[in-house]
Image (cartoon, rainbow, N blue to C red; front, side, top):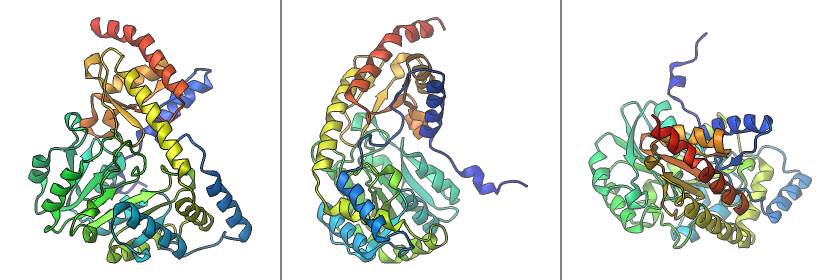
Amino acid sequence: MQLAERMSRIGVESAFDVLVRARALEAQGRSVIHLEIGEPDFPTPPHVVAAAKKALDEGWTHYGPTQGQPELREAIAAHISRTRGIRVGPQHVSVVPGGKPIIFFPMLALLEPGDEVIYPNPGFPIYESMIRFCGATPVPLPLEESRGFSFDLDLFAHLLTERTKMVVLNSPQNPTGGVIPREDLKVIADLLRERDVIVLSDEIYSEICYGEPPASITEFPGMLEKTIILDGFSKTYAMTGWRMGYGVMPEWLVDAVNKLMVNSNSCTASFTQRAGIAALTGPHDCIDTMVAEFQRRRDIIVAGRNQIPGFRCALPRGAFYAFANVTATGMSSRELADYLLYEAGVAGLNGGCFGEYGNGYVRFSYANSQENLREAVARIQKVSARWEAAVAAR
């Protein structure tokens, strides 16, 4: 018995592979500072946990509506309408277990062999994985450090063809922390408005930003009707293990996502949805506190990385990742990431894990304490002379 051919086209998330290797080192008694996994290290806000406990006590432990509980969909619609300056209703919302189904389900519903999908590279690896799995053609759009890890609009226009079926946008961005400027989004909207193209706008980090809130392409005329907003609770509310995300999209696409949900998950867990209502309608100060701490950590890690020989690290505008250019070290980013894990006890991710244009970079998540971030910098500085000697000896 052999696996179906389609399984050869599906990828994985390298962060979990690195985590396994880091845990193996820890099992041997080694100390490892974990900067590889992309999840907030803060606890889920107490009022959200309390809402889940109350829901369990009240019996919210059975099947619910496939599309999501009406009260949660109303809260999501109100939140999206307020934060993006648009008007959407609960009929436009699909609640799913985690954010990834809002990548997979719309792609599965829309893409045919021969279709092309433009996506950011370096970018979240599941984009390319799902595009290939659906039999479509991934078209990488390079993100440029010199543009704050946005992309060349002329190149974007050049990559658009009659076969382009979908464009994936991610802002703030994983792995770079870059944000697409509002004026660039306007140009993108002008290029796409009259085309038979749908936009998947991954806005999962929308509330983790430093400075002006990021714009959404749905704010521009004619784009709401042809955009899927991906958002959720994992990053903003430190709820990664709760597995709850959502998509906001045209009603005709909601129907397709519902069918795929019925055939895969039936529904999202009922008691977690009650917690989601509390998250959206409850106090926001816990998020403000988390983002302020992330900003302090960002400043520490970026300043520290820029003191290390061969490192150059831009200041992220959102999310909680520092994407350090390491080409001047003389080592490939894959070699360097392995070296830092095994020699310094610092777990980061080779930028090549996020696509070919990520080669030459290492991603560090700063979802860790200030003390550990400073220690990670000190450890890397300590071994830097050794890697410089090793490179010189080649």
